[in-house]
Amino acid sequence: MSKPRFAILDDYQGIAAPHFAHVEDRVEIAHFPETLDPRDDAQRDALIERLRPFDVILAMRERTPFTRETLAQLPNLKLLLTTGTRNLSLDIAYCAERGIPVAGTARRPVGTPSTVQHTWALILALARHVPRDDAALKAGAYWQGSLGVSLAGKTLGIVGLGKLGSSVAKIAIEAFSMKVIAWSANLTQEKADQAAEGLGLAKGSFVAVSEKLDFFARADVVSLHNVLSERSRGVVGKEELSAMKTTGLLVNTSRGPLINEEALLEVLNAGGIQGAAIDVFDPEPLPLDSRWRTTAWGRDGRSEVILSPHMGYGDEQIHGWYDELHSPDSIKMAPIAVQEPTSTPTPLYPPATHPGLIRVSRSTKAFASGAYSEVSLPAGSLFAKITTATPGTKAYTSVQTGRDTHIELNSDLVFCNHSCTPSLNFDMHKMEVRVVDERPLSAGDALTFFYPSSEWEMDQAFQCNCGSGDKCKGLIKGAKGMSRKDLEGYWLNPHIEELLSERDAAN
Image 1 (cartoon, rainbow, N blue to C red):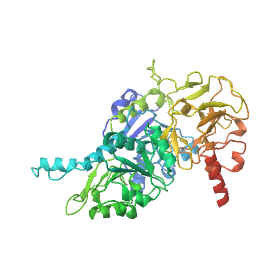
Image 2: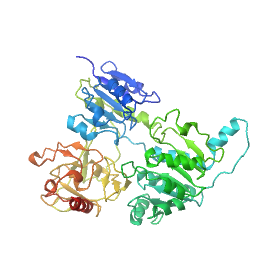
Image 3: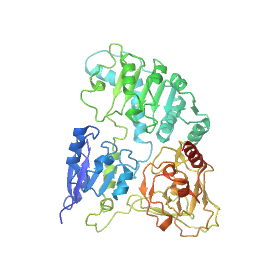
């Protein structure tokens, strides 16, 4: 039997090979570090030709998008791997239709997320003119050519007060004595207070600003942390940039298309704000003839500009992702023959968050872990309060709490999987988990809930295999794509009921 073929994409640093060396005798591995952009017809054709023979493809984050059109031209594909658990550039629904498993890495480094660290590196470099002064000294030019900006007492504006935005904001308060304001389309002061309290800060630490232009006018530093969607694309345009102070600093470590690029280039070329630090672009990698690369920033009245090549997540954690993916258990998820090792190291897990209540069964296979009850409770009774949550963004591991808000559970409740005949209801408005009204919970029962009861539109659609027979809904995308008949009999969160009513009224 021929060896399965495995393609590793977009490994810019060339660090993947040693992590997969132990399977080279059983798997034919090819490395393609040069990114091809399928939005360009010629590059799409080259990408398809390159990947058509492969059984397994490893995508590095969102560097190479895989749309339905591209995936349809890859007849040999049996497994699609990605680093991380969130990759909006993969057509998960199409993979589910074709029966192609999609697996991601779940490992997260402890402490402050790398993107938060990089955001602060850029803010400080811009405020203190570090790259400019470094270049001047090495060129034998001026000594102390300008004064740095003191951040103490200044106002940091956060666009998107999710997990990353909140973490950046907390550092602003605790490390630099800055004031923090925040804006997003549906942010309220109540939600801002919840985000602050979730990080151990007092109510009022984050001030929600309802008027968008007022937000941009008040901020000394604006940092973007929105998730990119059709709704958020171009959320910062000419009007918002014009509202900023001439001394303002703009930092984007989220996604390039959140900002109207032409409007930003125009403002920077005119010196409309003091400076910008940009880590994300469209397209990526940034073309050699891009105006970002070729313009003499900081001269002739232009704003100061610092560029980094999407390094918000580009640190040592990538080795950990490759380590997680190279494990034999990850590779054997695909329907290909791989010899299993004689022994597997015992992983170290954090302590149980609900001892005596939840038993977690962990698996190294993606999405195969589960939670089981250690107690018996009557129908409709309280199972657990949700007390360890922090603000999050739309992701496979998060839970939706409102129209546009999400949390990370940060507890063993995250192991409660989906089922079309659930044992629990997750009430995200009361922040509690209850036994379903239809039947009691017995010790040993799988702890499950009906994902569309909280999720309007799933971050990653998936093919349900809950074993509920005729009751199984098949492809789970969220409540948005389900009929009232499909949802009949299920308890639904108030925000889902509200969104359904709006949808029905519009139709």
